[in-house]
Length: 462
Image (cartoon, rainbow, N blue to C red; front, side, top):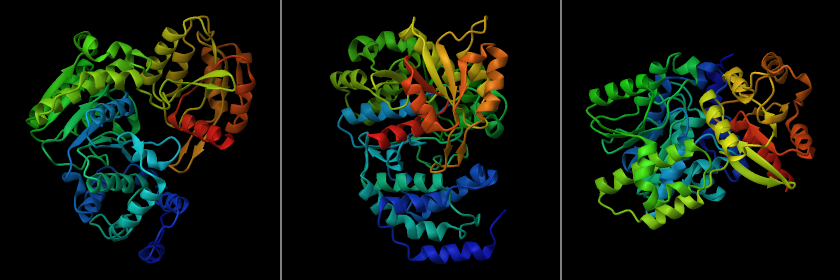
């Protein structure tokens, strides 16, 4: 039920003289802006207008810095991280904004791949609260800024204030109406990772419609770098590029690896999985392009060191916990799950794992389950047991709840007739403690939110 105008006015009056003193107060303030309805969660053009208005009141910080804008279905986070790492290694001051965060919100505001301090975060948030209050209910669309929009605006504000050389910005959802799609500069570099079917209820039910949404981050007369895509996707990207009179480079990761591997160590990439080589190739292509455009020379030894030491939390993240190997991967769509399982089998060809699984509501979990238990005889090719659990995350861009474990169990039974292999433990803390006591190594996957919640448990128990 929508709030009345009186309640909104009362909230604005309360916020007028607000001053946040602690990080916890900052978190509470942000949580109050998490959307409660589906219209608020995915506002489309309305949200983009609202974000642009907010940024205009902030002095349009997004137009004062060079931006690398990354969209796609799979590999956005890793590609952003690697682009930031490569440019940082060359001596540049680089801002990195990603979403969602795993443990705390400062992960979305990184300088040189290091989170800004909590005190600094509070300082900058206090600086923009008067502008948030001016924007809420007062902009042309007369609606309140969302959690995501505030953080996008804050990221651009912080990066401009710190005078970064480059800001690497990961899209949230889609591209065309995403809150990050607010930069009009023609020197914005757009980077497109692998595009597949995801968020079909919002972005469209065909690969072409989804590709169009992602490709609409491309600016007029700008530059675009894309990994090689499905033919239908490539056709859409080329059409958008031509219409906007932009330049595009498509990267074939196999050919690119062969050309570059001796010089910069792509073959020694610390990140596991062939798909990470795709992301590394895309990141390196972006750095190469910028070096030519902006007139700096890449130091190959420093690039080599970046690839050899790269480590990205929550993406084929192998850890030792309680003397047990635990692999965390935030695969949350069929494309990502296929890539993760392929990498898992390649690295551990004869090993079986206990899988701790939960999937966000609305995701194509049935297809992901099929990938996990893909043997014709119904047995799991890589898992001994499947432990189904749940999560409820209310401190992110939107409230994220998991599918009911019982519902997932019935689908697993349909594909995997060995019912004794499935355990349902809805309480996440109990599920994590239970799986840790089992003798087999563990895989935690199905959602980045699940991974983040487990990371919180681990941190709390230290």
